[in-house]
Structures are given as C-alpha cells and as structure tokens.
Image 1 (cartoon, helix red, strand yellow):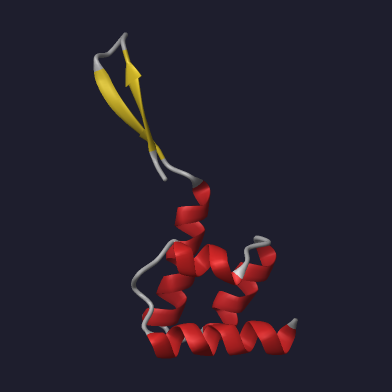
Image 2 (tube, helix red, strand yellow):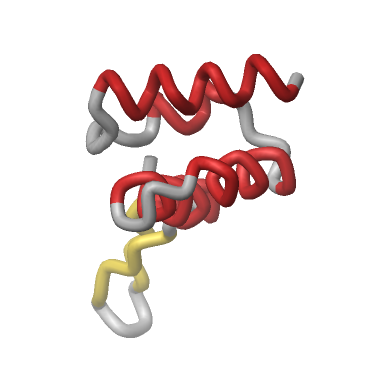
Length: 77
C-alpha cells in the first residue's frame, strides 16, 4: 500500500506510491478499455508480475476478465 511521509521542513504529507500500482492500472486499462488481453499479458511478463499480483491489487476486473486473463497466462506458461 501507499505510505505517508511527514515532511517537517515543509509541514506537508507526501504520499509515496509503489510503482507496481501504476503497472497494474495499465494492465487493467488494457483489459477494460481496449479489451486487449495480449497487451496485458505482455505487460505482466515484461514486469515479472504474477497473476496474484494483478488480482490482489484491483477490484475492477469482473469474473469473465479474470478467467480470460488466467486462461491466457496458463496457456502461455
């Protein structure tokens, strides 16, 4: 998850984001907006992510999308 760092010098909160969330967001956009499971698969493989990494970090994928992505990952493993 994200962490908050309190900056005493500027008296502000700075949110540190993990880069994996941006990658998962990109994967979800490929699936939901473009219906392009091939690009999603390539992004997962290029970033050495697991299926569990993607599913645990998003709630936007419906059951059909999750099973289609799982099927693609299994068939290409």
